[in-house]
Length: 73
Image 1 (cartoon, rainbow, N blue to C red):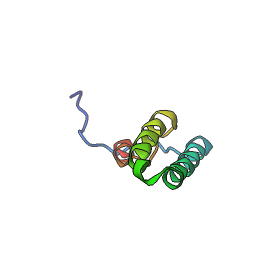
Image 2 (cartoon, helix red, strand yellow):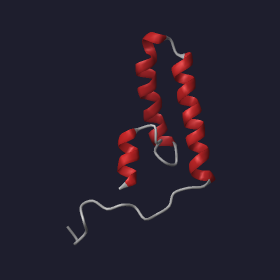
Image 3 (cartoon, rainbow, N blue to C red):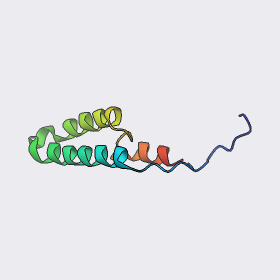
């Protein structure tokens, strides 16, 4: 459609403080959730945290592999 290849690699470099700081905070928060939530609630808490991180981090939280791969293309 529109004479564009189906798969293309991104040519925009996404780096800088605005990308790294939210990822550091999101990673720290995820580790905190995993270590501090009771064992029988970890799965649900991680799912909720990743959902929130996808919405509220600049990069859609690279902790989500689907978002990271989609963003790469």
